Structures are given as structure tokens and as C-alpha cells.
Picture 1: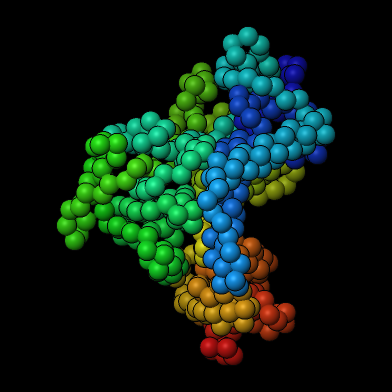
Picture 2: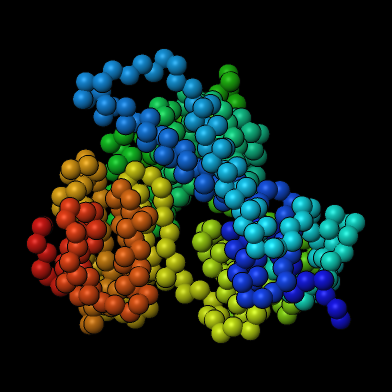
Length: 461
């Protein structure tokens, strides 16, 4: 059969556009179909605009630092809409950048809705049919909506809604204290919104290392952010222009009231209306099952990113797409990502970052595991920049000093974590870090000291 393309990709997010460029580099003829904007959720209504708001929230908060130096700041003309506008400019700029990259790499880009109609066949808006040797699904995800907590865009909001909002509420309840919930709690609090954080499980960042999560919880508590954990929420009700949320906790029941409710309880994969039933692909809890190289049950069709049951992170989608297309192009590559080498970050203040096993998980895997921590305040630079909350924690094998995982809670933690991840990926051990000279003063000295802690010879603690 003659194909129009070697590869057709559905979705131009971090999985789709990265996979397309890598495939083109390897000599494949590629087409990308996107029904919305290039860049997907991450660039348009996710990672990028939210990090722009994190930056602006921190800038706004730093006014207090200026006032301590005698600078008088008049906030009477503050307009949150300007901050939101800047976040949209950032998103638009990067979205256009993705379009430029696709064009630069001579990748055909089609705006439209794709539907799979055969193992090698995709219909675009029901008007045009394209045949491809391989199809890769990278259609991403959307905010998960709970029954009884349906989004209305103003009173009950999704993460999409809050990113598009041009004014600040006076008060907000955030339901769900995962990464997204904690980040918006941080942003809104920095802008002066009264925030209450509600989590069903027993601590905020419930999928994260508990010790690391406690550091952030203490920081939030110092900021007078109300937090309710082990809290079961009933469907909200509206009273006198406010939203009321009844929560049941171990300490009793409580009715919380705020101007708006932000629901951040995960993301749902965009696997509906793709035509999967036309080729016999079934989903499991909405996700597409895949095997090695992210191949589905149909040999010619692959799926990557948020539509498969792997961590819903932009960099995971990108790497999965790279592995899939490298395999399509006949290159020897990993069959799947090693989950213990996937970094994750929470963009609060302090930031939380980590990879690999917790100590408990490592022991369950049969390792002689232990962990050691070093307080970030032991690094002189943290004192100099007045960012002393946090720690570096290394999980290691006591027999051979192998690094099994790490957690960092600190300003710039999402950047710092990669020294430890590179060591882990390169099969280095704690001694390789503990004996490596680190510049002074830097926050990375805390990593060196944590490595020394695993060997019993910290200097600055």
C-alpha cells in the first residue's frame, strides 16, 4: 500500500510536536494534526502560563523585601488582569514557537479534528482521509470533573478556568492538594487571596515523599494558609453569592465558605471520539493500554503522554514520543521509560522536586535502603538569599551507596534535582558526589552535604 506519510501524529503538545521533530530528524515523512493550538495543554493552559503566574506572584510578594529597604510602593493601581495578560503572552509566544519549529523542520501541520478510521487511516473533520504507515496518539488530557462538582467557570472552577480568569477572588477553596492544587494555592496566596486547601488523603502532595510534603505544609502553615487533610468533601452549594463546601474530617465536620472553589483532582485522558473502536482498541479507566515502545494492541498505532497510564508530565510525553518514533525508524532504543528516573517538580515556594523510590518503596523492592537529609539552611547561600526552608534527602543502598531516589525541597529545587538524577542515571554513587568540589556559595552544596551524610561525615550540620 502507498502511504501519504510514514507517521501521522494526533496532537501537537509536548508528545506530538517533539515526536514529530525527532521523527523528521530520523528521516520519516511526518504530519501532525491538532484541533486547537500548537503546544497542547502544557504551553497553552498548563505548565507555561501557570509558571508565568508563579513568577509574577513571587515578584508581587517581593514588594515586602523592597519595603524593608525603605522603598515605598503604592499598590492602589494593582491590576491582576495585567499579570494574567502576561501569562497569556508567554503562552502565545511559545505556542507560536512550536509552530515555527514544525515549519522549520518541514513537518506538515493540519488544523482539524482527527479520527482513526483504520489501522493506517485517519479522517480529518470527516472531510479528508490520510493514510500513514504509523499513527501516534498524543491527544493529552483535561481537568478531571467530579460528579456534583461540575465546572461552571466562575463559582466552581477548573485549572483551565483559573488560568483564564482576569480578576482575583477575595477567597478561594482549593479541593485537591496535589501538584496543581498546591501550585495554585501558592499563586493565589502570594497575590493576597485567602486560600483554604482541602485534601482527601492524609497529607498534602499525597503521592510525594511524606517528609518532603511536611516541609511544604509547614511553609503553608506559616503563611496562614488553612489546610484540611483526611477531609471528605460533599458537593458544594451556593449561598448568598458564595460557595459552601461541607467537609468531614477526623476532627469533626466543618462548613467552608469562599467566593470560589477550584477543583484540582487530577486529569482525564482525551481518548474519547478518537475512533479507537474502529480498530478494536479498548481503554482501561480511559487510558490506552500500551506495550513496549508505546505500541497499542494495533501494531501500526502508538500512544504516548497523558493518554497512557504513566505520569502525566510534559517531559514524560516528550520522552515517550522520542522512544516510539526512534523504534519506528529502526533505531535501537529503550522499550519504555524507567519510572525511577523520571523527575517531577512542584512549583511552589519552596519548590519540591524528586525522583526514584522513597525509602519505604526501596525496601519493598528488596534494597537495604536508608535515607539521609541535610537542611537547606546549612548551605550559606540559602541564608544570604533568605530562602532557608527545605532540605535535600537522598535514598540509598547501604551496601554499595547506590542512589535509589532523592527529594529536594528548596527554592530552585526543580533545577537542583538534576545533579542527583544525572548521578543516578550514570550509575554513580554517593561518594562521587560527596567528594566532588562544589562552588561556594551555592545551593548545590546542600546536595554535596546530603551525599556526605549517607557516609557519616557532614561538615555543616
